[in-house]
Length: 287
Ligand SMILES: Nc1ncnc2c1ncn2[C@@H]1O[C@H](COP(=O)(O)OP(=O)(O)OP(=O)(O)O)[C@@H](O)[C@H]1O
Ligand SMILES: [Mg+2]
Image (cartoon, rainbow, N blue to C red; front, side, top):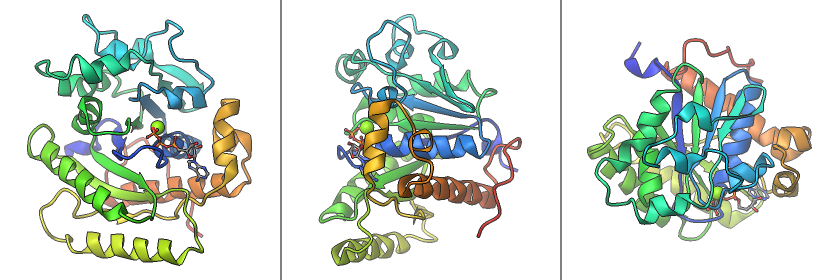
């Protein structure tokens, strides 16, 4: 077993484009992993604090947040963790986090702050999902420095491939310097229109693009389009305004079904690769 099986599996949910489904996926994939028995932590890395709102937590209410991890002196990560549901905790964000993106960007060692903070929580979680802000600034670079792997939520739309290429080149830059074991392993299609012929063509284009790199040494050589695509489902857009995950809000809707199956697929993928934490549960039988 490799050393990477020790401690939680850390995943950055990253796309520099706004509004593609990063937060919705962090919350609901995370809730699906928690329901499967994995002790899951979600970290809100976005000054917009949308992830925190999914749990009914208002930003700027004085509690320690992700920005407290970047303060001088920093807060203890354990003091920032809020329990959301069984097996599902989160670290909220607030607007102060925008200062990290702006004022602290040039500070020595700032890229490793999140990695070092999360290391102190290693015994408490099996999985940590990092909800990145749109953009590729110092907060996203912190997430890439802390993560083992990157999932890219995106839409199968015009110019999608160009954005993906840019993102993968950022992953490569971080992998070449700050975090040599980083890899991009999954594209997650969000708000997917299953009947759209344009969408089908773009998905095929993404697959063909990724297939070219199998067996090379780029950090996305094993990247796949994860299954299933997450269909467009209004329930997913409604749930956060009630401070609920999709499984609390409507556990039988298509959105819940898609995220449940995505979580099962991710667990199976990790198990096949031998990177699931040793204490993690056996996934439900496929079928
Ligand atoms: N599968 C879906 N079906 C319907 N609406 C969705 C779906 N996924 C996400 N949405 C909605 O689309 C909007 C953008 O999603 P989300 O906030 O997850 O994107 P994001 O990438 O985190 O955005 P940002 O870059 O601003 O952080 C939200 O209003 C969300 O509720
Ligand atoms: Mg978001």
